[in-house]
Image (cartoon, rainbow, N blue to C red; front, side, top):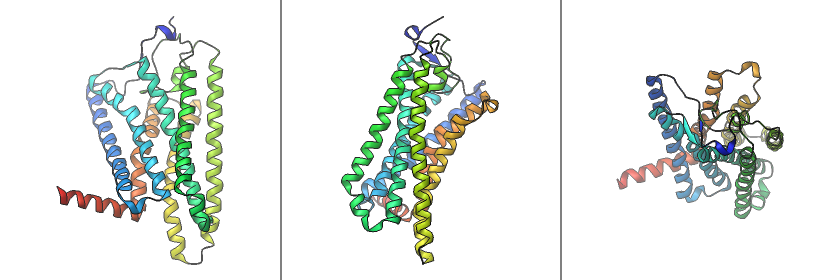
Length: 310
């Protein structure tokens, strides 16, 4: 029997058993991570450099891209390292840091998506009050609140998880460190505290979800009252990217944590983990850049200037 004080490292789940598949997974992870880094980096650069994009919607989009970069950099580099060097080890400290960041960045992303929904609601349902309700100071305060609340939640969850005594070995049934596999190693009833924190976090997430649904009901009612077809199309075009990103985020996370135990299997759990930890950060920039004409124009202009300078 061992306890948490004697554990110096954890063993992560291997992505593959054969060397050929390990190298294939390394190449796939490298491709996904490079695509996510490039796409989110382009959005951050375009919004930061394009003065006409210094609006609330693009300010929150920049913050969303930062959270996506953080998410992809939390899990992928270690998984790539393990696949390339055929190892499963992760140190106790690195595991704790990974748990913190895995809670922090998705938490911030969901808060930012909720705020972006409020931005769309005010823009369409209360356009005359947009400048008052979403001034630069108000946007900065909302973004700071999103990051701060995610930081506090991640800190509490991580500190509580790693205060539990662990006596069921150090092998995690996941290719990165997250709370459920660590709780399975606990030999103390104090894990109920952790479950309480998880339930609290889920309640907050559900509150954000209800707010998003309610806001979109009001948005669609307002859009359908717009007399011109062009006006309706313009309003829908600003909402659909956000709605697609929200749906992708919620569906992958919900399937991961709410699927029935009868559906659980190592291969399915691994596939779903890859789905919710890597796919949203890589697809979010694509969804926004394809649907937003201003952003596409800014990206084209930035790339044209870069080529001319080169």
